[in-house]
Length: 315
Image 1: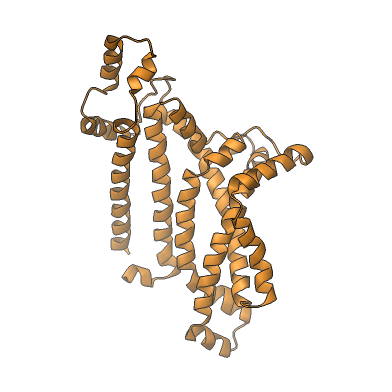
Image 2: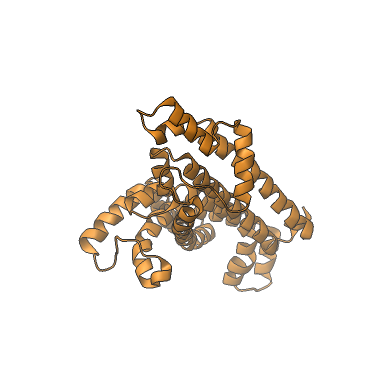
């Protein structure tokens, strides 16, 4: 078990290191234009631009800039925005909880809908009830999150004004007010995501329900609900958990449209603003945090899988 944990954590650290280099190069070395000229303005003299480049370290080779930045990032210092003067870590600490909460809430809604629907559909495969459950969810998958978000926002602002708060309120300032702000965005994220989890659960359950040990459990007189939800579902969970971890990473980094629709001050929306203002130091820090969230989601799943199936540790 210890070797399994070490192997997974070492692999995650290596992937994060490679991603950090790619993110840094994309944010500075490969970005079009000159950030120093953007900061100085179009009428700045070459001397002023050169002075700004020197103060920001942009006159150094890109690899040396990366090494300096990585050393500071490991200590939690992502630099200071040359445009706003704010410490980037302070901005990230304000934005990250919003995106993390929205991703977790959307994922929770998707799991609550998708897993039971997948189990129900698998145990009634080929029947009218199977299609009755699957068809609405599969249809909802055709509509992206921003469609659900826009429709939900219209309904909430016109008919559910007492249940929805358009101003973001942190959970630390009141959980009920926070739910009023985050429930609709969570539904906009969770409903289109639920079909993916449902289909994976159904497919995995169909495979497990055909195994000999499930047939043996049934002939042994064990209650059907126990066979399905204790024996079969547990055996079917590994691929479902893997998909959930992958979806979590995609959600954290792909919620900028939903955050924009609902005016949520999250990382995705902040990253768009940083790109628009060519704030390269802020872009680098925000993009790295999004990449780290994707890796973290998959690492958590890798650590949970041995609890569900102990054979994974021995593989």
